[in-house]
Image (cartoon, rainbow, N blue to C red; front, side, top):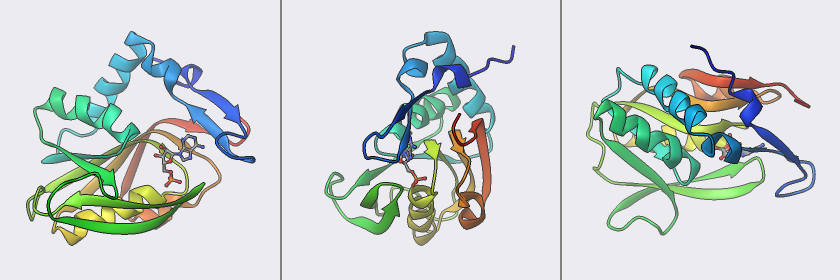
Length: 173
Ligand code: AMP
């Protein structure tokens, strides 16, 4: 059965800043069937990965259950200062702001194939930063899986890897 996930995404205008069309995933998470379907569909697209990688915080919501379903490792990408031990950092620009992301050195093994999972692909800045971190750790990125991809950004071209979405959202939708 194909489920239409778009109806569970609510657009909130001017949040968290004026001019941003914020895509709220709360209704999808709050619907057990939609959540189950989302995790299953993402897992189908991640079967060939050695590791699943997801960023803090919404990448954890989808990446960890997908990894658990496939019995694969999940690796955290977190904001600066959250991960203990030796870390590798990357400074990048967001649709609304800047951030520094980190991975623990050596947690992913050289030569492993990764699938990255996140909620929204907008500018692609976050995913690009994660790809850079993984490549610096000697990991090959097979693809990126996002719950939704937003129209109006040239993000696919800058990512240089396969991109899969479960929902494509046009401007003003
Ligand atoms: P980006 O680096 O611009 O592709 O966006 C990175 C992250 O910021 C996404 O994974 C989302 O968690 C969040 N984000 C960016 N734009 C939006 C948006 N319009 N609505 C909701 N979340 C967003």
